[in-house]
Length: 121
Image 1 (cartoon, rainbow, N blue to C red):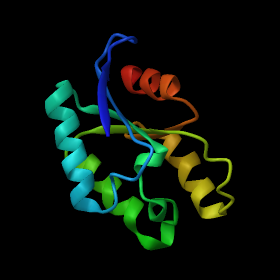
Image 2 (cartoon, rainbow, N blue to C red):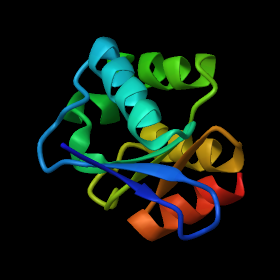
Image 3 (cartoon, one colour):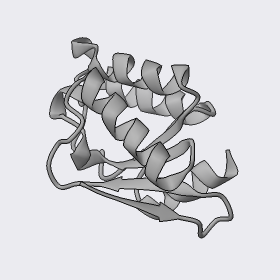
Image 4 (spheres, rainbow, N blue to C red):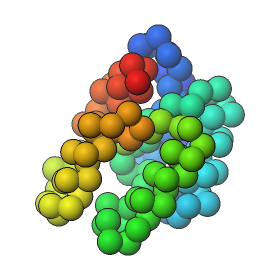
């Protein structure tokens, strides 16, 4: 896992990159969240899709709801970036669309789009 700070859009954003899942349950999500907040000094975190367990994208598992609720409880805005086109589940598509209408969680197709959204919201 690599955490870098992006300040390109004027507000610091912690960017979490990993090619393997580092967020597999609520505790690991809290660990990543707190590490990113500590290392970057920000409450805005962009997470590469591959850093999340595949179970996160199966809404019936409840993992996405539990993890994103923790982000909300701790006042951390989160953007998840990557290619979501392979997910065809209507509930997941609806969840992504509804999340993107809010101000807490955003799904973006690129790291740049995620960092830009976080810097502006």
